Length: 187
Image (cartoon, rainbow, N blue to C red; front, side, top):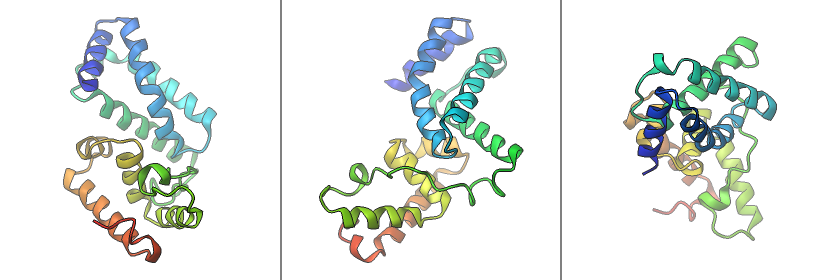
């Protein structure tokens, strides 16, 4: 399983194995890049922040020690470094509520819309998703776009498992209320 492979690579990293760390970097960096570019719409800045993060992990690997969920640890750290950057540069007044809406096509085709030719429905879907509170949007993105499990999301965001479920439930309820999308969300 992927989690066990990542743990093995981290354990090799703890022993100073650069090859294991390079493999860990190769497996996690692309996902982390996509994840963080949703928070900061600047690819170069995200690249710099992630490279700094990976350097810090290498330099502090002994202090970090054993990690039970490597992927969640890296996601949480990437999220933290982006939020710290936002705070320090005063780009936003708050952490999540005023964070810019992700500039992504919320992959509505992959998540909930099966008929690609119906552009009106897609537009309604994107509008509905972008109208959700930032926290709900972030959790839906992690759950359906990044395909993370509820426990992984809870671990990354440092919130309770039940809170993740509640956010998803409320978001789906809100989306169900959008008139022309009710058939898409039929249980």
